[in-house]
Amino acid sequence: MDHFLYHNGTLHAEDVAIPDIAAVVGTPFYVYSTATLSRHYRLFTEALSPLPHLVCFAIKSLSNVAVLKTLGNLGAGMDVVSAGEYLRAKAAGVPGDRIVFSGVGKTREEMRLALTGGIRQFNVESEPEMRALSEVATSLGVTAPIAVRVNPDVDARTHEKIATGKKENKFGIPIARASEVYAEAARLPGLQVVGIDVHIGSQLTELEPFEQAYLKVADLTRRLRAEGHAITRLDLGGGLGIPYARSNEAPPLPTDYGALIKRTVGDLGCEIEIEPGRLISGNAGLLVARVVYVKNGEGRDFLILDAAMNDLVRPSMYGAHHDIVPVAEPPVASPTQEFDVVGPVCETGDTFAKGRDLPLLAEGDLVAFRSAGAYGAVMASEYNTRPLVPEVLVNGDQFAVIRARPSFDEILNRDTIPPWL
Ligand SMILES: Cc1ncc(COP(=O)(O)O)c(C=O)c1O
Ligand SMILES: N[C@@H](CCCC[NH3+])C(=O)O
Image (tube, rainbow, N blue to C red):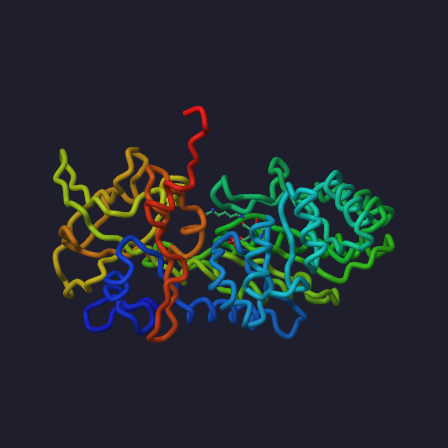
């Protein structure tokens, strides 16, 4: 469900017409819907109720502070993976006791930042990290709450670049070694074991891999408790997929996912944490671009947009599909044409879609990439010295620019010329 629909022949974000935003910020731009973000967050909290739980939004999917504040105000926790993300969560007013810190390479500085600023738990991914955290916490005279991320060796059946739960992946400790790792955690000063963490990958379109992983976590909970550890919290990660090609994809819904969690780990008396990113933010965002040229090539027509791979890298990085729609609603049964949809960047990989059937489009027309809220703006770069595109947040009939397009002056001022030049 999203709130990007056609009204009066024009695509709207909630009650705001997309061309009205384009007139203010220019193109390309990202636009997010408050209603969709809120609805998706609530779907998870409803799906997990009445279990005690915290939905920690995976900031990596969409990290604009205004978006984080929107979710934080509803009571969401945050899953962060860097000092920058931690500071963003705090800037959005999220208290430390609703922030979990994930990631395989947390530095001592990052640990210190979170321990002094407040943290719900660290999801520790290795023994060296656990020892470092013990040292940092002891030096600060505090106790660090931890869950150990286990790698359950489960195939998430997703794109190989975003699968994280197989034994060959860098994430977590092998579940078979959990007993010894937890025993060491219990011995180390400055650490308090509170739970178990698992995250097997992103854009999962089936529930079965989650089920396999969560059943292993349930077994491990019983075993670790028998070994004397107080396991009171289970962090089950994120990863639930979204439909990208709306006409033919129907991944499981948060309700099904919630039911699965209840079935697999619901009877352990643990507080449940989940870390969804994409399902909350993905369909809450569009990337809007303008057609620069329609170019007739050899046996194909190119739709050249003013957005490029640096603005939305998913198609070139993962071969990902995004539905592309015209902002002006095409008349019913209007003719279509096949286009290769590309950006202006000097790489053949700067291709959003090949042979995509689209309504007839012309220079100056606006188009929107659907499902671009997650891993869109956050993965953007200034490759080809293209300024990062602005972000806009819509709420009902109002909208605000939540990140402005940098000027070329700002961009050029970031470089400094050394004295010898
Ligand atoms: C530790 C962790 N938690 C949560 C997420 C969020 O995943 P998704 O956006 O697929 O829900 C990720 C990314 O896959 C992750 O690495
Ligand atoms: N960047 C990936 C998702 C990565 C998930 C990270 N934990 C994507 O666009 O699909």
